[in-house]
Each structure stands twice: as C-alpha cells, then as structure tokens.
Length: 215
Image (tube, rainbow, N blue to C red; front, side):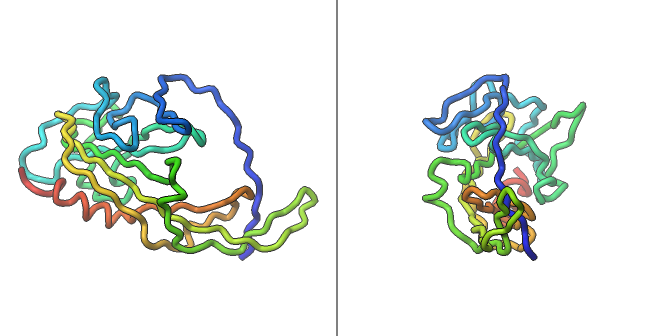
C-alpha cells in the first residue's frame, strides 16, 4: 500500500492558564494532581484533582484514576485525566464517577512518556518501521518511497494514595512490540516517526499487586 506523505503546519494558539517552567524546552500547564516535572515525585501543594478520595484500605480492587502527560505544542504540556479502562486496563479498576468527576478514588496514577522529553532521542529505541510513504510535491508528483521509524521511549509511572498524596510505587516500562495498525495513512514530511507505548497487559501486571491486593 502506498501512503501519501505530506507536510504538516503547526498553528499557534493562545492558551489561558498558569504555566510552570520545566527547563529550556518544556512548559507545563499547572492544575493537576501529578508532579509538574518528569523527574519529580512531589505532588503540588494545591493539586487540581477535582474528585473525592477514599482511604487506600480494605479489599481490592482499589479504585483507580489516571493522568498522563500529553503535548499541546512541542514545548507545552498538560496532564490529561482518563479512565483506566479507556487505556485497556480492567474496567473493575475504574473509579466511579459522580457529576462527571471521579469519586472515592483510592489510587491515582501519573504517566510520563519520555517521547515528550528533551532527551527522547537518547533514550528511545527503534522497534521497526512503517513502509510505503511517498512525498508529493506541489504538482502532485510523488517522490521516492520512504520509511518511517517506529520508536519506543520509556514511560515512567508514579502511583499515589489519592487521599494522602503518598507515593506507593514508581516504575518504568517501554514498548517492545507493535502491529502495523500503528502506521498512519498520512504522515509528516519533516522527520516523521511513529511512537508506541507499553501494552496495557504489561501495565496491568505492574499495577496488579497494588490495585488487587487487600490492605
């Protein structure tokens, strides 16, 4: 299959909200439960977790809510809330929602993907490539076929007691395999690459002792 390779143009936007510097290349939109630095374990004093919490005690599974770092622009990031089951984790782990907010949350997971960090190229690993891409010039004439590398970068996970903000565990995973479904039909003409993330099964295995066990 031949895919069309096109150039993507970034459009700037004015974003309202507090900003926190993460170094020369990183800014973070403040206002989430999670630490504002990739290399920190300290939860902000005025964290923006909008739901209610419950003690990390009793039988499992313990209710879980999650945040992950996502890019807004190449230098601006925010923490995005999501249900664990939306990322392939067991639905029985999901915190219940009341009025659109997670309720009685016992554990809160923060995920930081190093593909967004300034040293991504140093720590990433090439897992394969996507084939069949061609650049089309302004006249629609295709150029030579190109390949897009498929890369994996470490993802750091911080698991907290939601009620106390105490760090329960910290671990890192990196994707080891992928399927061709990750290859886009259209890709950027400027140094394109595809990033993959750890399998939900691997993340579930790392979290299971803390989510499923009785306390």
